[in-house]
Amino acid sequence: MMKKVLFVLALVVFASCGDDDKNEPKEVIDYTVKNELDIKEYIEANGLDATRSDSGLYYVIEEEGTGERPTASSDVTVAYKGYFLDGNVFDQSGSSGATFPLSGVIAGWTEGITYFKEGGNGILLVPAALGYGNSDRSGIPGGSVLVFEVNLIEVN
Image 1 (tube, one colour):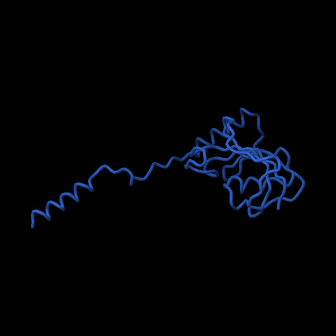
Image 2: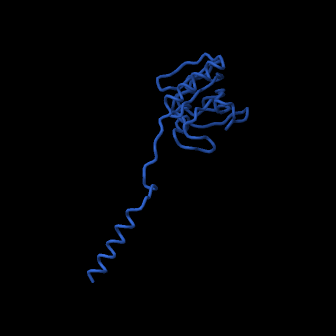
Image 3: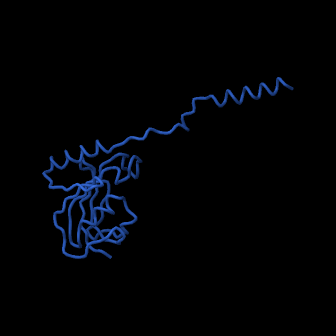
């Protein structure tokens, strides 16, 4: 009986000593510095007059607009094109735009759209920390800087 108990105990110990890295935490990469440098290079290469907010969002106001200014809790209709720093488009709306609550989008949009008034347009340069972070999402690699050309059509 004692041999059986020791044998089972030895099996349990042996099985638990495996090299199981499924439970190991994945390395979290901080893209903050790289994103900042990449955005600054993009701004310079494209001759943009961008402003940096305290959160790290860069924005370019091409036309401020004359209508109502949204808040972070507003519903808005925005025509947009989203692309990576290399110019590859990952998403865009039609010219009539898309309507959504600013409270339900990435932080870069929640903040950035509030810099415009209805009828305004410009560019948002969103670092990963204000976008999708380190996670791959719908064809967007983790750590990506996102560029959005936006036209705020309406505050609903």
